[in-house]
Length: 273
Image (cartoon, rainbow, N blue to C red; front, side, top):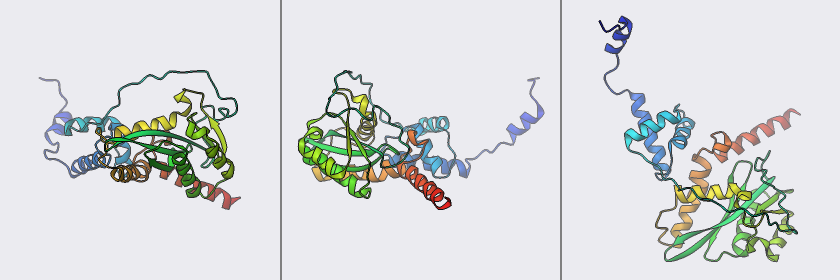
């Protein structure tokens, strides 16, 4: 009468009536991924984390289950940037938006942002390796000066084993153009590259990192103390961002995993040749 196949009706009548163990496990992993992100991860990020942990989950199913569980992520409103054609002559834009890098320690970029701490602004300087988008140096201070950016660069230089032939790209802030900072680059034998003045798209990976940090991790009201901010941001950089959070640029891999695979393949090829 209803033009249904007998097999379809039989399948429907014999369907599992209770909640399966796998479904309960999936729900648990989705909640855990959302919690470890500080409530910031969206469907794409959660699907990547859960899949990396061994349970296949698509972005669309993650979105559906997040709605069922009433889990939401923080979103940043759209922002328009102004462009300019002005360019500093003595420090050219060598990088020229070539953000895809073939190996680690070939091109780094850096920038400074501000974070509300207690009743005043604190400043965070970061150095990132463009190969895997891994943050390799950082420093936080109440003064956005050359000492701050120099500490972040020195940390990156030491942690990466004092590499040679590195290019460092930044904007034209005075903490990057100062004589003291350029002397530090010269001592480390690092080639300097700079964005065009006022053009944030020339340093887009750093802008994207700061956007993720502020929307995913930093409280909307800021931090209560300088020490709290320092501990929390360090935990984000070396913990969640580097080890847990899948990066779209790395084909869903974390920065740590992306570099681990590169060096594994590099050593394998070297031993073979």
